[in-house]
Length: 133
Image (cartoon, rainbow, N blue to C red; front, side, top):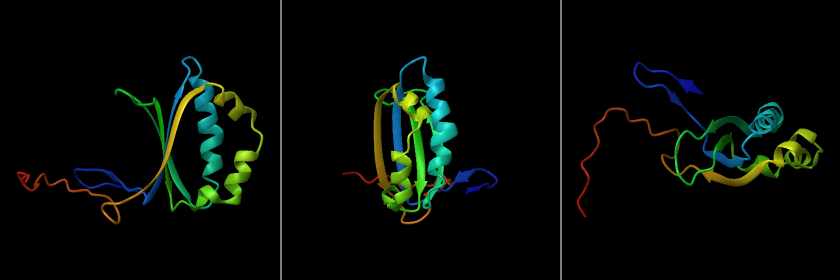
C-alpha cells in the first residue's frame, strides 16, 4: 500500500519478505526479464499468501548480484503450499530457457524484527545524540 504525505511518500510492506538476487549472462537479460515479468511474477502472485513483488536492477555497488526481487508474503506458508509445489514441478520452456543464463542466485526469507508492525518512518530529522561508549 502506498501512502502520500506532503513531504515523504511511503510504501508499506508486510512482515515477511522473500529476497531473491540473481546474475544473468550478458546478452541474455531479455530472456530472463521475459520469464520473470510475464510468467514468474503473475504465477507466484496467484498463490494465496503472496501479496506483492517488486523487481530492481543494480545501479551501483560491489559484491552484489545485478537483479533483485522483493516478494511480500503474509507469512512463510505460501512456500510450503501445494500450489507452489505444483508450479515448481510444472514444465515451462520459458523458465528453462531463462535458467540457462542465470549464473548466480541467492535467496533468503526474512521476518521483520523492528518495528514490530509497519515501518520506521521518522522524517523529522530530530534524532537522539549518539551515546559514547
